[in-house]
Image 1 (cartoon, rainbow, N blue to C red):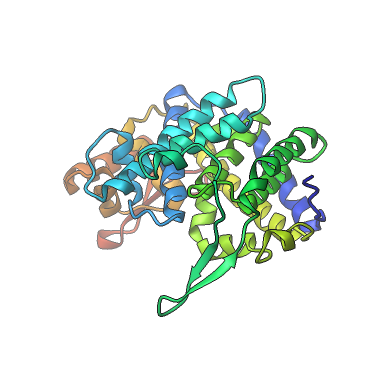
Image 2: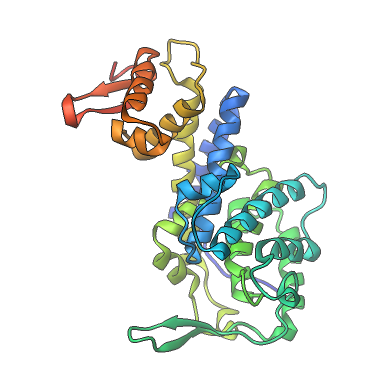
Length: 353
């Protein structure tokens, strides 16, 4: 039976408190349907990009956005298919989230089948691994070193059943803690020949959705892992064999996981507050078109934007980009700072108007 050992430290308490506070802000925020749909679309693109990027996929975010829109992308076919599969799996967990029952083993296998469709042999897609696997690190010079040995394949089904049973009975454990512990244990069991990380991140998201902690389904935890993949893997690597991990203290992992959760919900809070009140606190929310929303999303993520940034993200001539920025300034959405080549744009507020 899965019985994780951990302590709720002051840092975890503080981060959980911040997460809960922001959850309330996000839920109370009123967005017009077009903006909420835009926010969700941006999140889907970021989820698909960052989660596949963690596994080595080379498509950039713009290319993933093109795939979402059904456009042809020049890249390795397998890498494009990996992104297409992940996008399909995100739709799949949205459907599963609407069910009254929690997800089960058949749902897990279905998600894996979607994630690996056409990327692994058919007999390995949607089934638990039939044999033993080893996680290796590639050292300088190409030498391989075994970093982790998962449990025997004959134990996988039982271990997943025990993990799901634990998940269903821990109603008094904070949903974010449950999600973090599930994420850790799933990749520790390593139930599949390939696709374990992607499936783990999808199922963790699904559990949060089913627990009512979906943050308008616009939270992108994968972005946190992808910014420092080494730290992500190091925090998961608590011991070199499954046996040694059985009684390991998971406090450090939880501090990492909950801390990252806190960072990402803070970013989401800023995006939602901007989108819900863009145009200034004293004005009715402006109705923005698709290109204008892309500009606002870029600034809420990065902090500021130049006209060249607008050219790049909109893929339009510089004159067109400058006209769009001028209109956003006239609407009171953006404020122009500086002159000439050093000109950039930030979101308008009472303090900078």
